[in-house]
Image: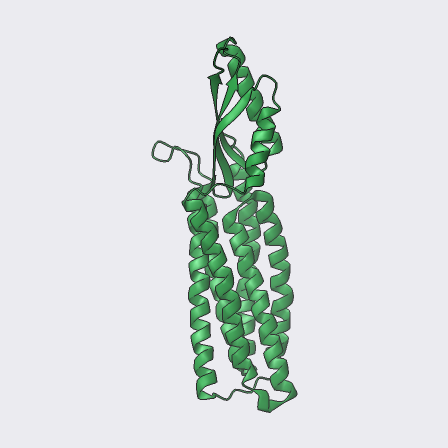
Length: 298
């Protein structure tokens, strides 16, 4: 039984929240770049580059959602949801690349004692970025969790990493404004930004690897599946439960043991009851295959 008929509807909701991120990132790229140049802040310019990478990943997620929502076809009998997982892995790779670039640039500034003295426009731009990106993060992660979309959730953390990096910028610029001799704090803030981004990128890549390698969900989910199945009238036992995640949705196959004296119609009815139970109890089901096995005679 396939339960992915509403995948296109869910993808539409994902596209809407991602488009909001696109417009916010377009604004922040210009605002932070101007603030960094006028306010002489290396950390804020690095933060603007981070927002640009946000814009790129927004576009990747939009493409992933559109293609991933396509119905199964002859060449892709299990659907296209893995393309959404691929989109989230691209987000992770971009995050790691951006982190390394920002970190190297900041490291060079610290090593060569490059002098830049940030001013209040940089402070203002960092503060606006924190508020805007945290708001977008909260909304995006809410939608991503509701839709069980790894790409949207990864993108939400990209927004959060941008907000965290702006906090580091705010701290560095504030320190430099309090005491101009502390101007190097701006470069240290940029270096701290790179660590934030790197951590998020590695987490996103790890989650994508788990999906690509068909890693089973946590034991609590597996036990919930078995308990739900055993509670269906007519089910004697459940075995060979296989569950994988594709595009944030569960695809599962399991065997139920029923009385061997039942008719084919009765066995089929029990299988359908198992499917209904799992749809009601397990969030994020995309596909269920129930095999009916007869109990061995006494």
